[in-house]
Image 1: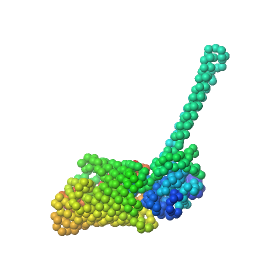
Image 2: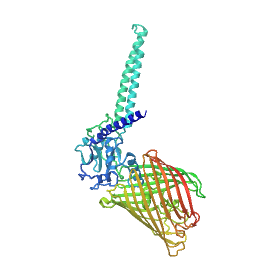
Image 3: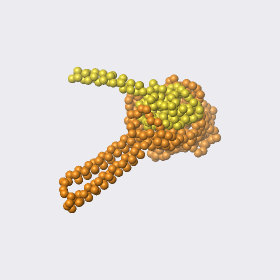
Image 4: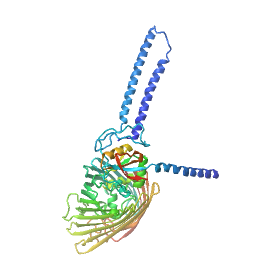
Length: 150
Length: 461
Protein backbone atom coordinates (compact mmCIF):
# COMPACT_ATOMS: atom_id res chain seq x y z
CA UNK A 1 0.00 0.00 0.00
CA UNK A 2 2.74 2.39 1.00
CA UNK A 3 4.65 1.50 -2.14
CA UNK A 4 1.60 2.32 -4.27
CA UNK A 5 1.21 5.68 -2.59
CA UNK A 6 4.87 6.43 -3.10
CA UNK A 7 4.68 5.30 -6.71
CA UNK A 8 1.63 7.50 -7.31
CA UNK A 9 3.37 10.44 -5.72
CA UNK A 10 6.47 9.96 -7.83
CA UNK A 11 4.42 9.59 -11.01
CA UNK A 12 2.34 12.66 -10.26
CA UNK A 13 5.43 14.68 -9.44
CA UNK A 14 7.10 13.52 -12.62
CA UNK A 15 4.00 14.40 -14.63
CA UNK A 16 3.87 17.83 -13.07
CA UNK A 17 7.54 18.43 -13.79
CA UNK A 18 7.09 17.15 -17.30
CA UNK A 19 4.12 19.33 -18.19
CA UNK A 20 4.99 22.44 -16.21
CA UNK A 21 7.68 23.63 -18.60
CA UNK A 22 5.32 23.01 -21.52
CA UNK A 23 2.48 25.03 -20.04
CA UNK A 24 4.92 27.74 -19.05
CA UNK A 25 6.43 27.86 -22.48
CA UNK A 26 3.02 28.48 -24.02
CA UNK A 27 2.80 31.90 -22.46
CA UNK A 28 6.52 32.50 -22.70
CA UNK A 29 6.56 31.90 -26.42
CA UNK A 30 3.99 34.61 -27.15
CA UNK A 31 5.41 38.08 -27.06
CA UNK A 32 3.05 40.69 -25.68
CA UNK A 33 3.52 44.25 -26.88
CA UNK A 34 2.33 47.37 -25.11
CA UNK A 35 0.86 49.68 -27.73
CA UNK A 36 -0.04 53.35 -27.88
CA UNK A 37 -1.53 55.64 -30.47
CA UNK A 38 0.78 56.50 -33.35
CA UNK A 39 0.41 60.19 -32.53
CA UNK A 40 1.78 59.62 -29.03
CA UNK A 41 5.12 61.40 -28.70
CA UNK A 42 6.79 58.65 -26.72
CA UNK A 43 8.66 55.99 -28.61
CA UNK A 44 9.87 53.92 -25.69
CA UNK A 45 8.22 53.25 -22.35
CA UNK A 46 10.51 52.06 -19.56
CA UNK A 47 9.01 49.45 -17.28
CA UNK A 48 8.84 51.73 -14.19
CA UNK A 49 6.91 54.31 -16.19
CA UNK A 50 4.65 51.63 -17.60
CA UNK A 51 3.96 50.45 -14.09
CA UNK A 52 3.01 53.96 -12.96
CA UNK A 53 0.70 54.37 -15.92
CA UNK A 54 -1.04 51.04 -15.54
CA UNK A 55 -1.42 51.58 -11.79
CA UNK A 56 -3.17 54.89 -12.45
CA UNK A 57 -0.41 56.83 -10.72
CA UNK A 58 0.58 58.66 -13.89
CA UNK A 59 -2.50 59.85 -15.69
CA UNK A 60 -1.19 62.18 -18.39
CA UNK A 61 1.21 61.75 -21.28
CA UNK A 62 4.06 64.22 -21.84
CA UNK A 63 1.85 65.87 -24.45
CA UNK A 64 -0.80 66.53 -21.82
CA UNK A 65 -3.24 63.96 -23.16
CA UNK A 66 -5.09 61.91 -20.59
CA UNK A 67 -4.04 58.30 -20.28
CA UNK A 68 -6.72 55.75 -21.05
CA UNK A 69 -5.85 52.22 -20.01
CA UNK A 70 -7.31 49.23 -21.79
CA UNK A 71 -7.18 45.79 -20.25
CA UNK A 72 -8.16 42.64 -22.02
CA UNK A 73 -10.93 40.74 -20.29
CA UNK A 74 -10.14 38.19 -17.60
CA UNK A 75 -8.80 34.90 -18.87
CA UNK A 76 -6.91 36.31 -21.83
CA UNK A 77 -3.26 35.17 -21.88
CA UNK A 78 -1.97 38.67 -22.63
CA UNK A 79 -3.69 39.98 -19.52
CA UNK A 80 -1.91 37.38 -17.42
CA UNK A 81 1.40 38.58 -18.81
CA UNK A 82 0.64 42.21 -18.01
CA UNK A 83 -0.55 41.36 -14.50
CA UNK A 84 2.64 39.42 -13.92
CA UNK A 85 5.15 41.74 -15.56
CA UNK A 86 3.74 45.19 -14.91
CA UNK A 87 1.29 44.99 -12.06
CA UNK A 88 3.06 42.15 -10.28
CA UNK A 89 -0.33 41.20 -8.94
CA UNK A 90 -2.85 38.41 -9.08
CA UNK A 91 -6.34 39.06 -10.40
CA UNK A 92 -7.59 39.37 -6.84
CA UNK A 93 -4.86 41.83 -5.90
CA UNK A 94 -5.52 43.82 -9.05
CA UNK A 95 -9.20 44.05 -8.23
CA UNK A 96 -8.51 45.06 -4.64
CA UNK A 97 -5.90 47.60 -5.67
CA UNK A 98 -8.29 49.56 -7.88
CA UNK A 99 -11.10 49.26 -5.38
CA UNK A 100 -8.89 50.75 -2.70
CA UNK A 101 -7.48 53.38 -5.06
CA UNK A 102 -11.01 54.48 -5.89
CA UNK A 103 -11.93 54.49 -2.19
CA UNK A 104 -8.92 56.68 -1.47
CA UNK A 105 -9.94 59.03 -4.27
CA UNK A 106 -6.83 58.30 -6.32
CA UNK A 107 -8.72 57.00 -9.32
CA UNK A 108 -12.36 57.36 -10.18
CA UNK A 109 -12.60 54.18 -12.22
CA UNK A 110 -10.44 51.14 -12.90
CA UNK A 111 -9.08 50.41 -16.39
CA UNK A 112 -11.81 49.31 -18.72
CA UNK A 113 -11.90 45.70 -19.81
CA UNK A 114 -12.04 45.16 -23.57
CA UNK A 115 -13.08 41.77 -24.96
CA UNK A 116 -10.65 41.28 -27.81
CA UNK A 117 -7.23 42.23 -29.05
CA UNK A 118 -8.78 43.60 -32.23
CA UNK A 119 -10.83 46.05 -30.20
CA UNK A 120 -7.85 47.05 -28.07
CA UNK A 121 -5.93 47.84 -31.22
CA UNK A 122 -8.88 49.69 -32.69
CA UNK A 123 -9.41 51.87 -29.63
CA UNK A 124 -5.71 52.62 -29.30
CA UNK A 125 -5.51 53.52 -32.98
CA UNK A 126 -8.42 55.91 -32.67
CA UNK A 127 -7.60 57.61 -29.37
CA UNK A 128 -4.41 59.58 -28.77
CA UNK A 129 -4.29 58.90 -25.02
CA UNK A 130 -5.03 55.20 -25.09
CA UNK A 131 -2.62 52.48 -24.06
CA UNK A 132 -3.17 48.77 -24.31
CA UNK A 133 -1.45 45.54 -25.17
CA UNK A 134 -1.77 42.77 -27.72
CA UNK A 135 0.19 39.80 -28.93
CA UNK A 136 3.08 40.55 -31.26
CA UNK A 137 1.30 38.95 -34.21
CA UNK A 138 -1.70 41.23 -33.67
CA UNK A 139 0.35 44.39 -34.05
CA UNK A 140 0.07 46.30 -37.29
CA UNK A 141 1.00 49.78 -38.46
CA UNK A 142 -2.14 51.36 -36.98
CA UNK A 143 -0.49 51.47 -33.54
CA UNK A 144 2.94 52.02 -32.03
CA UNK A 145 4.77 49.48 -29.86
CA UNK A 146 6.52 51.05 -26.86
CA UNK A 147 7.29 48.05 -24.64
CA UNK A 148 7.66 44.33 -25.21
CA UNK A 149 7.27 41.27 -23.00
CA UNK A 150 9.19 39.13 -22.54
CA UNK B 1 -20.01 45.59 -24.23
CA UNK B 2 -19.44 42.28 -25.90
CA UNK B 3 -19.80 39.47 -23.42
CA UNK B 4 -18.47 36.01 -24.08
CA UNK B 5 -20.94 34.44 -21.68
CA UNK B 6 -23.86 36.19 -23.28
CA UNK B 7 -22.57 35.15 -26.64
CA UNK B 8 -22.27 31.58 -25.49
CA UNK B 9 -25.78 31.65 -24.13
CA UNK B 10 -27.06 33.11 -27.37
CA UNK B 11 -25.34 30.42 -29.34
CA UNK B 12 -26.83 27.85 -27.01
CA UNK B 13 -30.21 29.51 -27.43
CA UNK B 14 -29.88 29.38 -31.18
CA UNK B 15 -29.04 25.70 -31.01
CA UNK B 16 -32.01 25.12 -28.78
CA UNK B 17 -34.32 27.00 -31.16
CA UNK B 18 -32.99 25.08 -34.12
CA UNK B 19 -33.39 21.83 -32.28
CA UNK B 20 -36.99 22.64 -31.41
CA UNK B 21 -37.79 23.56 -34.99
CA UNK B 22 -36.06 20.48 -36.32
CA UNK B 23 -37.87 18.27 -33.85
CA UNK B 24 -41.16 19.87 -34.79
CA UNK B 25 -40.55 19.27 -38.47
CA UNK B 26 -39.41 15.75 -37.81
CA UNK B 27 -42.40 15.02 -35.62
CA UNK B 28 -44.78 16.36 -38.20
CA UNK B 29 -43.02 14.34 -40.84
CA UNK B 30 -43.12 11.19 -38.78
CA UNK B 31 -46.76 11.66 -37.85
CA UNK B 32 -47.92 12.22 -41.39
CA UNK B 33 -45.57 9.84 -43.11
CA UNK B 34 -46.66 7.10 -40.77
CA UNK B 35 -50.12 7.15 -42.35
CA UNK B 36 -50.62 4.26 -44.82
CA UNK B 37 -50.87 4.98 -48.55
CA UNK B 38 -54.38 4.87 -50.01
CA UNK B 39 -56.04 5.53 -53.33
CA UNK B 40 -56.66 9.22 -53.98
CA UNK B 41 -60.18 9.16 -55.20
CA UNK B 42 -61.91 8.88 -51.82
CA UNK B 43 -62.87 11.77 -49.54
CA UNK B 44 -60.17 10.56 -47.19
CA UNK B 45 -57.67 10.85 -49.99
CA UNK B 46 -58.76 14.39 -50.69
CA UNK B 47 -58.39 15.18 -46.99
CA UNK B 48 -54.94 13.69 -47.09
CA UNK B 49 -53.96 15.84 -50.04
CA UNK B 50 -55.21 18.90 -48.20
CA UNK B 51 -53.18 17.86 -45.15
CA UNK B 52 -50.17 17.37 -47.36
CA UNK B 53 -50.50 20.86 -48.75
CA UNK B 54 -50.90 22.22 -45.27
CA UNK B 55 -47.75 20.41 -44.21
CA UNK B 56 -45.87 21.85 -47.12
CA UNK B 57 -47.09 25.31 -46.20
CA UNK B 58 -46.09 24.75 -42.57
CA UNK B 59 -42.66 23.57 -43.65
CA UNK B 60 -42.20 26.70 -45.75
CA UNK B 61 -43.29 28.86 -42.83
CA UNK B 62 -40.92 27.00 -40.52
CA UNK B 63 -38.06 27.58 -42.93
CA UNK B 64 -38.94 31.26 -43.07
CA UNK B 65 -39.08 31.44 -39.30
CA UNK B 66 -35.73 29.66 -39.01
CA UNK B 67 -34.26 32.14 -41.42
CA UNK B 68 -35.63 35.09 -39.46
CA UNK B 69 -34.43 33.66 -36.14
CA UNK B 70 -31.01 33.17 -37.65
CA UNK B 71 -30.92 36.76 -38.87
CA UNK B 72 -31.97 38.09 -35.49
CA UNK B 73 -29.35 36.03 -33.71
CA UNK B 74 -26.68 37.20 -36.07
CA UNK B 75 -27.59 40.78 -35.29
CA UNK B 76 -27.46 40.12 -31.55
CA UNK B 77 -24.04 38.53 -31.87
CA UNK B 78 -22.59 41.79 -33.10
CA UNK B 79 -20.61 43.18 -30.13
CA UNK B 80 -22.32 45.96 -28.29
CA UNK B 81 -20.51 49.26 -28.58
CA UNK B 82 -17.77 49.70 -26.06
CA UNK B 83 -19.06 52.15 -23.54
CA UNK B 84 -17.63 55.58 -24.00
CA UNK B 85 -15.80 55.48 -27.27
CA UNK B 86 -14.86 59.02 -27.98
CA UNK B 87 -14.83 58.89 -31.68
CA UNK B 88 -16.65 57.04 -34.32
CA UNK B 89 -14.45 54.28 -35.60
CA UNK B 90 -14.39 52.08 -38.61
CA UNK B 91 -14.35 48.34 -38.60
CA UNK B 92 -11.26 46.94 -36.98
CA UNK B 93 -8.86 44.94 -39.06
CA UNK B 94 -9.08 41.27 -38.40
CA UNK B 95 -6.81 40.00 -35.70
CA UNK B 96 -4.04 37.77 -36.93
CA UNK B 97 -4.42 35.39 -34.04
CA UNK B 98 -7.62 34.21 -32.50
CA UNK B 99 -7.52 34.54 -28.74
CA UNK B 100 -8.89 31.65 -26.74
CA UNK B 101 -11.85 33.33 -25.02
CA UNK B 102 -13.03 35.13 -28.13
CA UNK B 103 -15.76 33.26 -29.98
CA UNK B 104 -14.87 32.27 -33.51
CA UNK B 105 -18.06 33.79 -34.86
CA UNK B 106 -17.25 37.27 -33.61
CA UNK B 107 -17.64 39.58 -36.56
CA UNK B 108 -15.44 42.60 -37.08
CA UNK B 109 -16.29 45.46 -34.83
CA UNK B 110 -18.79 47.68 -36.55
CA UNK B 111 -18.70 51.42 -36.62
CA UNK B 112 -20.09 52.75 -33.40
CA UNK B 113 -19.83 55.54 -30.90
CA UNK B 114 -18.55 54.99 -27.42
CA UNK B 115 -15.79 56.25 -25.23
CA UNK B 116 -12.36 55.18 -24.24
CA UNK B 117 -12.09 53.87 -20.75
CA UNK B 118 -10.29 56.36 -18.60
CA UNK B 119 -7.95 55.58 -15.80
CA UNK B 120 -7.88 58.08 -13.07
CA UNK B 121 -11.17 59.51 -14.18
CA UNK B 122 -12.13 60.45 -17.65
CA UNK B 123 -14.94 62.29 -19.26
CA UNK B 124 -16.90 59.16 -19.74
CA UNK B 125 -16.26 57.17 -16.63
CA UNK B 126 -19.87 57.56 -15.47
CA UNK B 127 -20.93 56.94 -11.91
CA UNK B 128 -19.38 54.16 -9.92
CA UNK B 129 -21.24 52.93 -6.84
CA UNK B 130 -19.61 50.69 -4.29
CA UNK B 131 -20.98 49.23 -1.10
CA UNK B 132 -18.95 48.32 1.94
CA UNK B 133 -20.12 46.98 5.24
CA UNK B 134 -19.23 45.09 8.35
CA UNK B 135 -20.89 43.42 11.28
CA UNK B 136 -19.71 41.24 14.07
CA UNK B 137 -19.54 40.23 17.69
CA UNK B 138 -17.36 41.53 20.46
CA UNK B 139 -16.76 40.17 23.94
CA UNK B 140 -14.62 41.60 26.69
CA UNK B 141 -13.94 41.13 30.38
CA UNK B 142 -13.57 44.88 30.94
CA UNK B 143 -15.74 45.85 33.88
CA UNK B 144 -18.72 47.85 32.71
CA UNK B 145 -18.50 46.64 29.16
CA UNK B 146 -20.88 44.05 27.74
CA UNK B 147 -20.62 41.39 25.11
CA UNK B 148 -22.55 42.30 22.05
CA UNK B 149 -23.37 41.67 18.45
CA UNK B 150 -23.05 44.80 16.44
CA UNK B 151 -23.70 46.38 13.08
CA UNK B 152 -20.62 48.24 12.07
CA UNK B 153 -21.53 50.35 9.12
CA UNK B 154 -23.01 50.29 5.67
CA UNK B 155 -20.96 52.48 3.42
CA UNK B 156 -22.24 53.74 0.08
CA UNK B 157 -19.32 55.07 -1.88
CA UNK B 158 -19.81 56.90 -5.14
CA UNK B 159 -17.51 58.47 -7.66
CA UNK B 160 -18.55 60.29 -10.76
CA UNK B 161 -16.76 62.13 -13.52
CA UNK B 162 -18.30 65.38 -14.64
CA UNK B 163 -15.74 66.41 -17.22
CA UNK B 164 -12.32 65.29 -18.32
CA UNK B 165 -10.82 66.98 -15.27
CA UNK B 166 -13.65 67.30 -12.76
CA UNK B 167 -14.95 64.49 -10.62
CA UNK B 168 -17.07 64.04 -7.53
CA UNK B 169 -16.50 61.67 -4.67
CA UNK B 170 -19.33 60.97 -2.26
CA UNK B 171 -19.60 58.63 0.67
CA UNK B 172 -22.73 58.15 2.74
CA UNK B 173 -22.42 56.08 5.84
CA UNK B 174 -25.13 54.35 7.84
CA UNK B 175 -23.54 53.56 11.14
CA UNK B 176 -24.83 52.40 14.48
CA UNK B 177 -24.35 54.54 17.57
CA UNK B 178 -23.97 53.59 21.20
CA UNK B 179 -27.63 54.52 21.70
CA UNK B 180 -28.47 51.78 19.18
CA UNK B 181 -29.73 54.20 16.57
CA UNK B 182 -28.57 53.96 12.98
CA UNK B 183 -28.01 57.33 11.41
CA UNK B 184 -26.92 58.41 7.95
CA UNK B 185 -23.76 60.45 7.80
CA UNK B 186 -22.26 62.24 4.83
CA UNK B 187 -18.78 60.96 5.45
CA UNK B 188 -17.18 62.51 2.41
CA UNK B 189 -18.34 64.86 -0.30
CA UNK B 190 -15.55 66.16 -2.42
CA UNK B 191 -15.51 67.98 -5.71
CA UNK B 192 -12.14 67.48 -7.38
CA UNK B 193 -10.37 69.17 -10.24
CA UNK B 194 -7.26 67.54 -11.66
CA UNK B 195 -4.99 69.79 -13.64
CA UNK B 196 -2.33 67.13 -14.12
CA UNK B 197 -0.43 64.53 -12.10
CA UNK B 198 1.24 67.32 -10.13
CA UNK B 199 -1.82 69.23 -9.05
CA UNK B 200 -5.29 68.19 -8.02
CA UNK B 201 -7.63 70.49 -6.16
CA UNK B 202 -10.60 69.46 -4.08
CA UNK B 203 -13.25 71.17 -2.00
CA UNK B 204 -15.70 69.64 0.41
CA UNK B 205 -15.62 67.19 3.26
CA UNK B 206 -12.69 64.84 3.26
CA UNK B 207 -10.65 62.52 5.44
CA UNK B 208 -7.58 64.39 6.55
CA UNK B 209 -4.24 63.10 5.32
CA UNK B 210 -2.85 62.68 8.80
CA UNK B 211 -0.44 59.77 8.67
CA UNK B 212 -0.84 56.67 6.53
CA UNK B 213 -3.75 54.74 7.98
CA UNK B 214 -6.47 57.35 7.74
CA UNK B 215 -6.22 58.33 4.09
CA UNK B 216 -5.56 54.74 3.07
CA UNK B 217 -8.30 52.80 4.79
CA UNK B 218 -10.95 55.38 5.62
CA UNK B 219 -14.17 53.65 6.69
CA UNK B 220 -13.77 50.45 4.77
CA UNK B 221 -13.46 47.62 7.30
CA UNK B 222 -12.96 45.18 4.45
CA UNK B 223 -9.77 46.95 3.40
CA UNK B 224 -8.27 46.66 6.85
CA UNK B 225 -6.52 43.50 7.85
CA UNK B 226 -7.37 43.75 11.54
CA UNK B 227 -10.64 44.44 13.34
CA UNK B 228 -10.84 48.08 14.26
CA UNK B 229 -8.48 50.94 13.66
CA UNK B 230 -5.42 51.61 15.78
CA UNK B 231 -6.19 53.69 18.89
CA UNK B 232 -4.51 56.75 17.46
CA UNK B 233 -6.70 56.56 14.37
CA UNK B 234 -10.03 55.94 16.06
CA UNK B 235 -12.52 58.26 14.39
CA UNK B 236 -13.12 61.48 16.24
CA UNK B 237 -16.85 60.86 16.30
CA UNK B 238 -16.03 57.55 17.98
CA UNK B 239 -13.95 59.28 20.64
CA UNK B 240 -10.65 59.24 18.79
CA UNK B 241 -7.79 61.64 19.32
CA UNK B 242 -7.21 63.05 15.86
CA UNK B 243 -9.35 65.24 13.58
CA UNK B 244 -9.76 62.68 10.83
CA UNK B 245 -12.53 64.33 8.84
CA UNK B 246 -12.85 67.97 7.95
CA UNK B 247 -14.48 70.45 5.63
CA UNK B 248 -12.20 72.59 3.53
CA UNK B 249 -9.96 72.46 0.51
CA UNK B 250 -7.26 70.02 -0.49
CA UNK B 251 -4.35 70.01 -2.91
CA UNK B 252 -2.38 66.95 -3.78
CA UNK B 253 -0.16 65.56 -6.49
CA UNK B 254 3.22 64.19 -7.40
CA UNK B 255 6.45 66.07 -7.18
CA UNK B 256 9.02 65.72 -9.97
CA UNK B 257 11.40 63.56 -7.98
CA UNK B 258 12.43 60.71 -10.24
CA UNK B 259 12.84 57.40 -8.49
CA UNK B 260 11.97 58.90 -5.10
CA UNK B 261 8.32 59.10 -6.10
CA UNK B 262 7.38 61.98 -3.83
CA UNK B 263 3.72 62.84 -3.28
CA UNK B 264 2.33 65.76 -1.34
CA UNK B 265 -0.99 66.72 0.19
CA UNK B 266 -1.92 70.14 1.56
CA UNK B 267 -5.21 70.80 3.30
CA UNK B 268 -6.90 73.85 4.81
CA UNK B 269 -10.08 73.22 6.73
CA UNK B 270 -12.41 74.24 9.52
CA UNK B 271 -10.66 71.98 11.97
CA UNK B 272 -12.60 70.01 14.48
CA UNK B 273 -15.28 71.11 16.84
CA UNK B 274 -14.45 70.39 20.43
CA UNK B 275 -17.63 71.75 21.88
CA UNK B 276 -19.09 68.95 23.93
CA UNK B 277 -21.79 66.78 22.36
CA UNK B 278 -21.28 68.17 18.89
CA UNK B 279 -20.24 66.71 15.58
CA UNK B 280 -16.45 66.85 15.42
CA UNK B 281 -16.46 67.88 11.78
CA UNK B 282 -17.61 71.48 11.41
CA UNK B 283 -19.77 70.96 8.37
CA UNK B 284 -21.58 74.26 8.34
CA UNK B 285 -20.10 76.65 10.88
CA UNK B 286 -16.59 76.98 12.23
CA UNK B 287 -16.48 77.97 15.89
CA UNK B 288 -13.49 80.19 15.31
CA UNK B 289 -11.79 82.05 12.51
CA UNK B 290 -8.65 79.98 12.70
CA UNK B 291 -8.32 77.32 10.04
CA UNK B 292 -6.60 74.02 10.34
CA UNK B 293 -3.62 73.40 8.08
CA UNK B 294 -2.20 70.01 7.23
CA UNK B 295 0.74 69.06 5.05
CA UNK B 296 1.83 65.54 4.21
CA UNK B 297 4.74 64.28 2.16
CA UNK B 298 5.42 60.67 1.28
CA UNK B 299 7.83 58.76 -0.87
CA UNK B 300 7.12 55.65 -2.92
CA UNK B 301 10.56 54.80 -4.25
CA UNK B 302 10.46 52.87 -7.47
CA UNK B 303 13.39 50.68 -6.50
CA UNK B 304 11.45 49.16 -3.58
CA UNK B 305 7.97 48.45 -4.80
CA UNK B 306 5.51 48.58 -1.91
CA UNK B 307 7.55 50.87 0.32
CA UNK B 308 5.88 54.03 1.58
CA UNK B 309 7.76 56.44 3.85
CA UNK B 310 6.37 59.79 4.88
CA UNK B 311 5.32 62.33 7.44
CA UNK B 312 2.53 64.79 8.08
CA UNK B 313 2.12 67.86 10.26
CA UNK B 314 -1.20 69.39 11.27
CA UNK B 315 -1.97 72.62 13.06
CA UNK B 316 -5.17 74.12 14.39
CA UNK B 317 -6.65 76.16 17.20
CA UNK B 318 -9.28 74.48 19.33
CA UNK B 319 -11.90 76.65 20.99
CA UNK B 320 -13.92 75.29 23.90
CA UNK B 321 -17.08 76.45 25.65
CA UNK B 322 -14.95 78.51 27.98
CA UNK B 323 -13.56 80.40 24.96
CA UNK B 324 -10.02 79.25 25.69
CA UNK B 325 -7.98 78.57 22.57
CA UNK B 326 -5.51 75.71 22.52
CA UNK B 327 -2.93 75.47 19.81
CA UNK B 328 -2.72 71.94 18.46
CA UNK B 329 0.08 70.39 16.43
CA UNK B 330 -0.11 66.75 15.35
CA UNK B 331 3.02 65.28 13.79
CA UNK B 332 3.17 61.81 12.33
CA UNK B 333 5.75 59.67 10.61
CA UNK B 334 5.25 56.32 8.92
CA UNK B 335 7.25 53.53 7.33
CA UNK B 336 5.06 51.04 5.53
CA UNK B 337 5.79 48.07 3.33
CA UNK B 338 3.03 46.18 1.61
CA UNK B 339 2.75 43.72 -1.22
CA UNK B 340 0.36 40.93 -2.05
CA UNK B 341 1.91 38.70 0.63
CA UNK B 342 3.30 40.92 3.35
CA UNK B 343 1.96 43.90 5.22
CA UNK B 344 4.17 45.79 7.64
CA UNK B 345 2.72 49.03 8.97
CA UNK B 346 4.57 51.31 11.37
CA UNK B 347 3.40 54.72 12.44
CA UNK B 348 4.13 57.12 15.25
CA UNK B 349 2.49 60.39 16.22
CA UNK B 350 3.09 63.18 18.67
CA UNK B 351 0.32 65.61 19.57
CA UNK B 352 1.21 68.93 21.16
CA UNK B 353 -1.36 71.08 22.95
CA UNK B 354 -0.67 74.48 24.40
CA UNK B 355 -2.43 75.86 27.47
CA UNK B 356 -4.05 74.13 30.38
CA UNK B 357 -7.77 73.53 30.65
CA UNK B 358 -8.05 76.76 32.64
CA UNK B 359 -6.03 78.74 30.13
CA UNK B 360 -2.83 78.82 32.16
CA UNK B 361 0.46 78.40 30.27
CA UNK B 362 1.47 74.85 29.65
CA UNK B 363 2.55 72.41 26.97
CA UNK B 364 1.31 68.84 26.79
CA UNK B 365 2.56 66.06 24.56
CA UNK B 366 0.68 62.92 23.71
CA UNK B 367 2.69 60.20 22.00
CA UNK B 368 1.20 57.30 20.12
CA UNK B 369 2.30 54.55 17.80
CA UNK B 370 1.35 51.20 16.39
CA UNK B 371 3.04 48.44 14.47
CA UNK B 372 1.21 45.80 12.49
CA UNK B 373 2.53 42.79 10.65
CA UNK B 374 0.71 40.21 8.59
CA UNK B 375 1.51 37.56 6.07
CA UNK B 376 -0.83 35.92 3.62
CA UNK B 377 -1.07 32.13 3.39
CA UNK B 378 -3.56 31.39 0.66
CA UNK B 379 -6.89 32.68 1.89
CA UNK B 380 -5.62 33.12 5.43
CA UNK B 381 -3.76 36.12 6.74
CA UNK B 382 -2.64 35.93 10.36
CA UNK B 383 -1.68 39.26 11.86
CA UNK B 384 -0.25 40.96 14.89
CA UNK B 385 -0.63 44.52 16.05
CA UNK B 386 0.75 46.38 19.01
CA UNK B 387 -0.55 49.85 19.70
CA UNK B 388 -0.01 52.57 22.22
CA UNK B 389 -1.25 56.05 22.99
CA UNK B 390 -0.75 57.98 26.20
CA UNK B 391 -2.45 61.25 27.07
CA UNK B 392 -1.78 62.75 30.48
CA UNK B 393 -4.57 63.19 32.98
CA UNK B 394 -3.99 66.96 32.91
CA UNK B 395 -4.09 67.09 29.15
CA UNK B 396 -6.46 69.96 28.28
CA UNK B 397 -8.06 68.24 25.29
CA UNK B 398 -7.60 64.50 25.78
CA UNK B 399 -7.92 64.41 29.57
CA UNK B 400 -10.84 66.64 30.42
CA UNK B 401 -14.17 64.73 30.46
CA UNK B 402 -16.12 68.00 30.32
CA UNK B 403 -14.61 68.75 26.93
CA UNK B 404 -15.00 65.37 25.28
CA UNK B 405 -13.99 61.73 25.50
CA UNK B 406 -10.96 61.02 27.63
CA UNK B 407 -8.13 59.37 25.73
CA UNK B 408 -5.96 58.43 28.70
CA UNK B 409 -3.49 55.66 28.11
CA UNK B 410 -4.27 52.63 26.00
CA UNK B 411 -1.82 50.01 24.91
CA UNK B 412 -1.52 46.32 24.19
CA UNK B 413 -1.17 43.62 21.57
CA UNK B 414 -3.74 42.09 19.27
CA UNK B 415 -3.51 38.78 17.47
CA UNK B 416 -5.84 37.65 14.77
CA UNK B 417 -6.47 35.94 11.52
CA UNK B 418 -8.31 37.09 8.45
CA UNK B 419 -9.92 34.68 6.04
CA UNK B 420 -10.98 35.87 2.62
CA UNK B 421 -13.94 33.92 1.28
CA UNK B 422 -13.41 35.50 -2.10
CA UNK B 423 -12.41 38.86 -3.54
CA UNK B 424 -15.32 40.61 -1.86
CA UNK B 425 -15.91 39.14 1.59
CA UNK B 426 -13.74 38.41 4.58
CA UNK B 427 -14.03 37.06 8.08
CA UNK B 428 -11.74 38.06 10.93
CA UNK B 429 -11.13 36.73 14.41
CA UNK B 430 -9.10 38.78 16.85
CA UNK B 431 -7.89 38.57 20.42
CA UNK B 432 -6.91 41.74 22.29
CA UNK B 433 -5.02 42.17 25.51
CA UNK B 434 -5.17 45.81 26.49
CA UNK B 435 -4.18 48.01 29.37
CA UNK B 436 -6.07 51.22 29.90
CA UNK B 437 -5.93 54.26 32.10
CA UNK B 438 -8.78 56.75 32.07
CA UNK B 439 -12.23 56.21 30.68
CA UNK B 440 -14.85 58.06 28.71
CA UNK B 441 -16.73 59.06 31.84
CA UNK B 442 -14.12 59.82 34.43
CA UNK B 443 -10.56 61.04 34.34
CA UNK B 444 -8.68 58.91 36.79
CA UNK B 445 -5.39 57.12 37.26
CA UNK B 446 -6.81 53.64 37.65
CA UNK B 447 -5.14 51.15 35.35
CA UNK B 448 -7.25 48.30 34.02
CA UNK B 449 -6.06 45.30 32.07
CA UNK B 450 -8.61 43.41 30.06
CA UNK B 451 -9.03 40.89 27.29
CA UNK B 452 -11.23 41.06 24.27
CA UNK B 453 -12.37 38.65 21.61
CA UNK B 454 -13.94 39.94 18.43
CA UNK B 455 -15.11 38.53 15.16
CA UNK B 456 -16.17 40.47 12.13
CA UNK B 457 -17.61 39.88 8.68
CA UNK B 458 -16.88 42.55 6.14
CA UNK B 459 -17.64 42.89 2.48
CA UNK B 460 -17.11 45.12 -0.48
CA UNK B 461 -18.76 45.03 -3.87
